[in-house]
Length: 96
Length: 381
Ligand SMILES: Cc1cc2nc3c(=O)[nH]c(=O)nc-3n(C[C@H](O)[C@H](O)[C@H](O)COP(=O)(O)OP(=O)(O)OC[C@H]3O[C@@H](n4cnc5c(N)ncnc54)[C@H](O)[C@@H]3O)c2cc1C
Image 1 (cartoon, protein in one colour):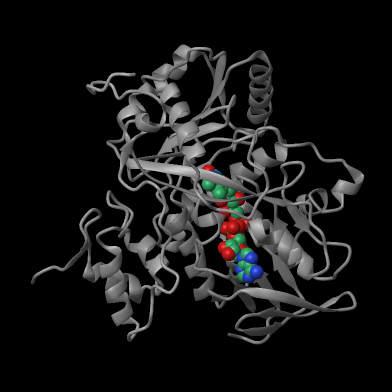
Image 2: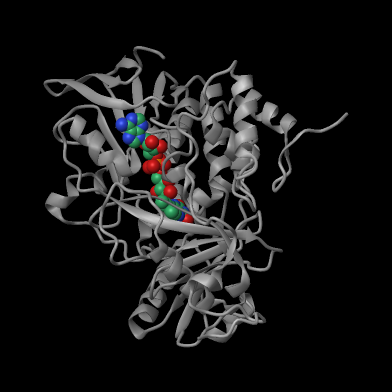
């Protein structure tokens, strides 16, 4: 049977969401932590909306994003060196 | 929600849940837990999962030793895998004073049965290949310290408590405590009231607010503590690495991420959990300095939670003078997660009067009047 993927970074499927819901994780924040969606490379940019839609359906149409998960830095995964005033080894950027 | 209970616990963090779980295991389960957010909303869902037995006071060493034994069983007991990995803790000392402190701590830890060793910088490099030990005088290492994943530990305790009859109400905020004379009458929430005569203040960084609702003052202050996590990497870093000179710490989680933070002497007390660029900058500088191979590692996220800080770095436990049945279980600073299993168990025995462990008198709020307790000096962050 076809599998519906909710979160591609962490490979979380619709079945995983349903299992998490059945295990008692009924709000978006808890379901996120239980299944791991939104905790990977994109930090929820491509999955949170899908997860919210399906969670809302599981809850009979409830608004599940009245208090949505907080958006935190970083916008994109970025090397530690970028924030440390250091140059990544092997990169071609030269200190100015 | 029940409108009456033998005991109400304010705060569904690891401390409140551990107490409830142990009470229920002992057959006492007429308990209502009130949590304003979801489980893991407080510090218990925001911490680094570090579990160490390297401390400077005998009480902390002994309590964390017993907690480690309990964490080792928690996955099996609850059915939630807490991913506890005992890769050790490596502390780095950079001057004579810190080195002397580590030496003294190691002696004390050895006496309590913790096999901590002092390591030369070269030996430390053997444990953490690539570690920059320039300027490091001496290190201490204990291989039975470790890291765990806090979320499943919280859920596991909550699930077990529920199965044993405890009522856990999430998204339920306590707004006031109704007191008649010296006696508690009820706890008021935004979803109704619960009549009770006993209330536990396990509200972590918010515990000072809960105490005020009961007409008490705690010396606890909330401090924002920031932390970050990287992309997952192949396992390569065994111990948690912590530099005593600036309070940097980082470890590799079972998911492969590097997770860590740093002390900030300029951080004042606040009720803020915002993220700062200053933290990102200082933390990245420090971790790359310690382990230069981390320079190219991508950071995924930073966040923050509260340390509930007391003047002597020790928790506030037990009764208060002003109100009967108002029990404190707070002030755990940056190390409440690792103490939660044993503190919950001892507090359950204390509540049921099965035993009177000395920590409930020693770490009572009254100590700040008599001034008798040894300060915990090995506090990070
Ligand atoms: C970034 C960071 C890293 C840390 N690293 C470590 C570590 O490596 N190892 C370690 O052992 N410890 C660490 N700690 C400390 C540890 O997380 C805490 O000591 C521990 O989680 C405290 O648990 P608690 O149950 O007392 O508090 P919390 O988990 O904060 O729980 C208190 C709960 O009370 C609730 N509450 C507050 N007010 C109300 C109200 N009015 N009504 C209802 N509910 C209310 C809150 O929502 C909260 O969920 C760290 C902390 C932070 C912030």
